Image (cartoon, rainbow, N blue to C red; front, side):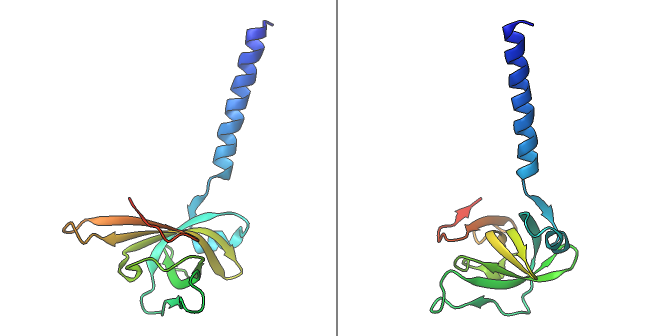
Length: 140
Protein backbone atom coordinates (compact mmCIF):
# COMPACT_ATOMS: atom_id res chain seq x y z
CA UNK A 1 0.00 0.00 0.00
CA UNK A 2 1.07 3.52 -0.69
CA UNK A 3 1.85 5.86 2.12
CA UNK A 4 -0.99 8.23 1.10
CA UNK A 5 -3.52 5.35 1.31
CA UNK A 6 -2.42 4.53 4.85
CA UNK A 7 -2.66 8.17 5.90
CA UNK A 8 -6.12 8.42 4.31
CA UNK A 9 -7.35 5.32 6.18
CA UNK A 10 -6.03 6.68 9.48
CA UNK A 11 -7.76 10.05 8.92
CA UNK A 12 -11.05 8.33 8.09
CA UNK A 13 -10.78 6.13 11.19
CA UNK A 14 -10.10 9.18 13.39
CA UNK A 15 -13.08 11.05 11.89
CA UNK A 16 -15.39 8.08 12.55
CA UNK A 17 -14.09 7.84 16.13
CA UNK A 18 -14.72 11.55 16.73
CA UNK A 19 -18.27 11.33 15.36
CA UNK A 20 -19.08 8.30 17.52
CA UNK A 21 -17.65 9.93 20.67
CA UNK A 22 -19.72 13.06 20.01
CA UNK A 23 -22.93 11.01 19.89
CA UNK A 24 -21.97 9.05 23.00
CA UNK A 25 -21.25 12.18 25.07
CA UNK A 26 -24.22 14.26 23.99
CA UNK A 27 -27.08 14.61 26.39
CA UNK A 28 -30.60 13.71 25.30
CA UNK A 29 -34.13 14.86 26.03
CA UNK A 30 -35.67 12.59 28.60
CA UNK A 31 -38.20 12.27 31.37
CA UNK A 32 -37.44 12.27 35.08
CA UNK A 33 -37.91 8.48 35.12
CA UNK A 34 -35.20 8.02 32.47
CA UNK A 35 -32.87 10.39 34.34
CA UNK A 36 -33.52 8.47 37.57
CA UNK A 37 -32.58 5.19 35.86
CA UNK A 38 -29.15 6.60 34.85
CA UNK A 39 -28.07 9.10 37.53
CA UNK A 40 -24.50 9.38 36.21
CA UNK A 41 -25.68 10.65 32.80
CA UNK A 42 -26.65 14.23 31.97
CA UNK A 43 -30.13 14.81 30.54
CA UNK A 44 -32.31 17.60 29.20
CA UNK A 45 -35.77 17.47 30.77
CA UNK A 46 -38.63 19.50 29.30
CA UNK A 47 -41.55 20.44 31.48
CA UNK A 48 -43.74 23.03 33.10
CA UNK A 49 -43.29 24.78 36.41
CA UNK A 50 -45.74 23.62 39.09
CA UNK A 51 -47.07 27.04 40.06
CA UNK A 52 -49.07 25.61 42.96
CA UNK A 53 -45.91 24.79 44.91
CA UNK A 54 -43.69 27.41 46.46
CA UNK A 55 -40.38 28.43 44.88
CA UNK A 56 -37.46 28.06 47.30
CA UNK A 57 -35.08 31.01 47.00
CA UNK A 58 -33.59 32.86 49.94
CA UNK A 59 -30.74 35.14 48.80
CA UNK A 60 -29.92 36.13 52.39
CA UNK A 61 -29.18 32.49 53.23
CA UNK A 62 -27.65 31.28 49.94
CA UNK A 63 -27.76 33.38 46.79
CA UNK A 64 -26.72 30.40 44.63
CA UNK A 65 -29.50 27.96 45.52
CA UNK A 66 -32.86 28.02 43.79
CA UNK A 67 -35.33 25.12 44.05
CA UNK A 68 -38.68 24.51 42.40
CA UNK A 69 -40.97 21.69 41.26
CA UNK A 70 -41.21 20.74 37.58
CA UNK A 71 -43.70 18.44 35.85
CA UNK A 72 -42.17 16.67 32.83
CA UNK A 73 -43.99 15.71 29.61
CA UNK A 74 -45.01 12.35 31.12
CA UNK A 75 -46.62 14.06 34.12
CA UNK A 76 -43.93 13.11 36.65
CA UNK A 77 -43.14 15.83 39.17
CA UNK A 78 -39.71 16.21 40.78
CA UNK A 79 -37.94 18.80 42.84
CA UNK A 80 -35.24 20.65 40.89
CA UNK A 81 -32.29 22.37 42.56
CA UNK A 82 -30.38 24.94 40.50
CA UNK A 83 -27.03 26.13 41.84
CA UNK A 84 -27.45 29.68 40.69
CA UNK A 85 -29.60 32.72 41.20
CA UNK A 86 -33.33 32.66 40.51
CA UNK A 87 -33.97 33.76 36.92
CA UNK A 88 -35.96 36.96 36.52
CA UNK A 89 -39.67 36.38 35.73
CA UNK A 90 -39.27 32.63 36.28
CA UNK A 91 -42.89 32.37 37.41
CA UNK A 92 -44.07 33.61 34.00
CA UNK A 93 -42.34 30.83 32.05
CA UNK A 94 -44.53 28.76 29.74
CA UNK A 95 -42.03 25.93 29.38
CA UNK A 96 -38.75 25.09 31.09
CA UNK A 97 -35.85 22.96 29.82
CA UNK A 98 -33.36 21.93 32.51
CA UNK A 99 -29.99 20.27 31.98
CA UNK A 100 -28.38 18.19 34.70
CA UNK A 101 -28.38 14.89 36.59
CA UNK A 102 -30.59 13.11 39.08
CA UNK A 103 -29.30 12.73 42.64
CA UNK A 104 -31.61 10.48 44.64
CA UNK A 105 -35.09 11.94 44.04
CA UNK A 106 -33.86 15.48 43.23
CA UNK A 107 -32.78 16.76 39.81
CA UNK A 108 -29.59 18.85 40.11
CA UNK A 109 -29.75 21.38 37.26
CA UNK A 110 -26.69 23.04 35.74
CA UNK A 111 -28.63 25.06 33.21
CA UNK A 112 -32.16 26.43 32.85
CA UNK A 113 -33.70 27.45 29.54
CA UNK A 114 -37.03 29.23 29.83
CA UNK A 115 -39.68 29.94 27.22
CA UNK A 116 -41.48 33.08 28.35
CA UNK A 117 -44.10 35.24 26.69
CA UNK A 118 -42.32 38.23 25.22
CA UNK A 119 -43.20 41.61 26.64
CA UNK A 120 -42.28 43.26 23.32
CA UNK A 121 -44.14 41.12 20.77
CA UNK A 122 -47.82 40.23 20.85
CA UNK A 123 -48.31 36.46 21.20
CA UNK A 124 -44.72 35.44 20.46
CA UNK A 125 -42.32 33.83 22.92
CA UNK A 126 -38.80 34.57 24.04
CA UNK A 127 -36.16 32.01 25.13
CA UNK A 128 -33.76 32.80 27.99
CA UNK A 129 -30.87 30.65 29.19
CA UNK A 130 -29.39 30.66 32.70
CA UNK A 131 -26.22 28.80 33.72
CA UNK A 132 -25.31 27.70 37.23
CA UNK A 133 -23.00 30.15 38.97
CA UNK A 134 -23.69 32.98 36.50
CA UNK A 135 -25.92 36.00 36.87
CA UNK A 136 -25.92 36.91 33.19
CA UNK A 137 -28.77 35.90 30.91
CA UNK A 138 -28.78 35.29 27.21
CA UNK A 139 -31.87 35.88 25.12
CA UNK A 140 -32.20 33.46 22.25
